[in-house]
Image 1: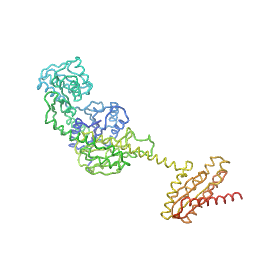
Image 2: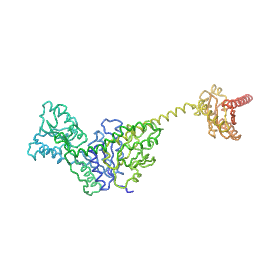
Image 3: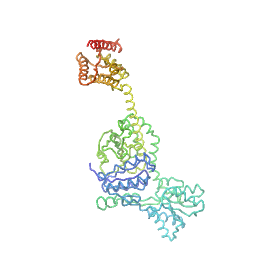
Image 4: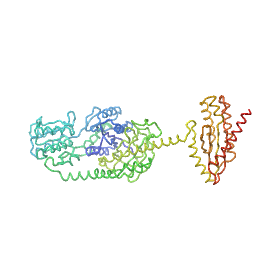
Amino acid sequence: MKKYKKIAVIAAEVFNEYHNKILLGITEQCAVLGYDVHIFTMSYNLDNNSLGQTGEENIFTLINNEAIDGIIFACGNFASKTYLESLEIRLIELHIPVIAIDCETMVCESLNASDTELFEQITDHFIECHNCTEIMCLTGMEGVPQTYTRLQGYMNSLEKHNIPIDDELIVYGDFWKNSAKTLCREFISGQRKLPQAIVCANDIMAVELCNSLVANGIKVPEDVLISGYDASQDGAENTPSITSLMPLNRDLGARAVCALHKKITSCDAELAVKEDGYIVTGQSCGCGENFVKQVERHESYNQNVRYYSDLYKTSNMIESLLEAENLDELLVRINNFRYIVNGLDVFMLCLCENWDNIEGDNNNYIKNGYSESMIVRMIMHNDSYQLTEIKYKAKDIMPDKMLDYVNKPSAYFYLPMHFKERCFGYSIFRFKDISYSMSSVFATWCRNINISLEFLRVRTKLLSVNQRISLNSIRDTLTGIYNRKGFKRFSDTLFKKAQSEKMKLFILIADLDMLKHINDNYGHIEGDNAITVCANVLNTCCQNNEICARIGGDEYAIIGCFEYDDNIVEGYINYINSYFERYNSTSDKPYQVGASLGYYCDIPEEDDDFQYCFNIADKKMYENKHERKKSRDNS
């Protein structure tokens, strides 16, 4: 399958109509020029320096100059200006052609929407359709290009209609709600005279101004006409609905691709997107809604956004995911909720190696960047899914496996998988149509997976810790072999197996010789050494999955269930005795280490119990102990 050149889009968020139209223009132009579009974005975009925000921003570290040919930088929608500055520095270091859109930046050429003529149109509308001559412009903050391009359109219309430009009617705002609230207070207090109409530089300010005025008894549109810019869903659904402008965002996206193509290839490209901006009339100017346009927009919004948002709200997705007991079960459960993501064509869940770090240091996990190798653990395509373990290099960004599912230039969305600053990996989405990405449901869907991965990681970690605690409770702390509790746990099981399967039960009892003498004469450190030596010899003699335990201060036991014969048992006894001989000849210790031994090896009868068999071995051990003491006394 053919590989295409890759253009990366860096955007803090894309889940709205405004940015969706920019992406539409980018993907349409890239399809003509033969580029794949790789869109790196975040599930949420905050300016709070939280660990969660750090985890979100990590997605942009994937971009590298080996995999990406050019970058479109939507720098205007980053909430964190501090992070934006660090991102700009990194873009310089990458040495990749970059075009910025919708915002000015010092690192590269910037393109903005062609909004001067559109803003002139909305001002014309107030003058020509509503006979307004006293029109205020609430534009953006000083120093921002869109502030001046929109203001210029306003002034062009006034000049065209021979209306004097009054500086008192030009108000610099903030593209946010605060400036609209301030302007409303000035009208209410009498500090400013209410004009006939107010053209706002975006819908956010228009909606807030309209609602603030209405809340203070000023009627819209009876007392003042208001318009916005962006034709946002919020403006359309406001009461009264906001007259606004549909911006040339598709055109902006396409022009950015052409400019970037020129940087990459030194060749000009013909613009493939033809778009005309237009006025979307609403109740705030008195014209009423353009019914056909509003119905089309409402229907599209309901089909692509609201319907799937409602599906998510009733899905109980997170509750189901948290019930998964292992990763494979979690992945299967994730597939059960694919219906929530509208228009999904391909989904890949790509996890870092050792993403859960179960056995590692709890503070030693990936916070910045990704593991050198990534693993595709799940692929959804159409109505099917598969669990995989496909490895690829993180620097390649997208696994070659994706090429099995596409046969033309395509757009891919990358979202970070993390919990706080702990990086798990990332997800890749490909939609059947770029318009489906307007819904934020797939980002929320991803965040649910993040939470469930962390929940699974913590639960697995706790299980591992509990298993270690359990093992520690049945292990002797000095020697590392099982203690009496561990011996009891396994001896019952092996005894029952020997009875039911008619196999021989082997029990060996060992008692360390002269431990009190060693402790009294050479100290407890040497006594501990003798205890450990005895444990080592008994543990290493076990060749058939026997259990070795220290069941008392100087007493040990071995138990096994196997097809024993006399040669095996004799071999064990000889091994133990020869081990002690070798140790004593080379240890340079002032004492001898040895043990008295006794054993039982037979198929238990149905009427026997374990203690009966144990007592036989224990009795033989004491007989051997008596003989060994007698031998030492005679020597």
